[in-house]
Image (cartoon, rainbow, N blue to C red):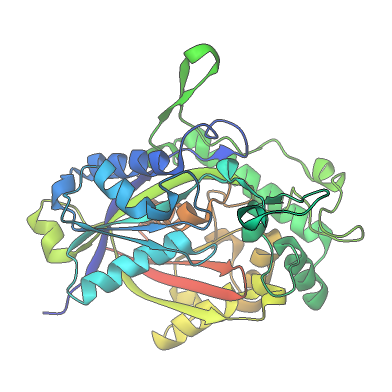
Length: 394
């Protein structure tokens, strides 16, 4: 019998704004918190997990380069279990789920934890040349966040690639701001209804004078944002540009994990499959307009499945920039009424190692609430790629 890969539920930390609530917690500790909460949420013993796949773009802290293994053992998995770090730019958390599925389909795993983390607030500064000796004079330090948010080919910021997309396809600033307001309002409604609370595992964060507080809600959403307020914001990447901080994804910290398992094994362990991973696709696109990535990725995925856009009940497309979603709507004919109904990167934030899992948790819950059959998760990837994953409700 052919193996079927299922998602059995997961959890994430609240996403913290840059330099705020999560800045004093190591990246691996964020991952351990999310992994433990994921296991507890589905009622799975850590010793029954044989593999952990961790997505991450910016390794931080001493354990960052070994984050998968640190999180695996820190969450209670056996010493003879395995761990893998993966990086696929903004799709790193999604790639973690896909890599777990590949391990299961190839017979090398039966029950895995897949997800990842970012703690951009803890990214260090680098001092190039210091190892082998520096000459007299001023020395430049480099913010390692810059490594992740610049195109590796022409060294432009990722936001400049979004400007290129607006230029090439003629998107207006007003369209992008309108989309951003919608994202903020949807996130606010999802917070008020408790929809987002269901996927969040509250975490104790340090305060002044040795005190702590419980951090239990996403910190970045601004549901009271208005079009008038966004219109006053200056472009970030070009003086005459259209991309602003208000219509771009937030720089945020956070971690998320989901249980990925072979269906029969999941059922033997008493787990309840919530969705199955059906298929996925990754494509290359011109790096200078990397935000177009979801369009060909979704097209190729649907073509291989002999499906059309209308055959998919719900879409989660990462809001790296509002223009990414506008382009997906226009080129694919997507309805905004069936896409990102609970906010996204613009409102909730976008820690690349965790975003794909956040999107999967949202899509799974949406399918359950609405009785939907399937969903597609998609995102553009820095350096010029697009990724899409098809899941179905079980």
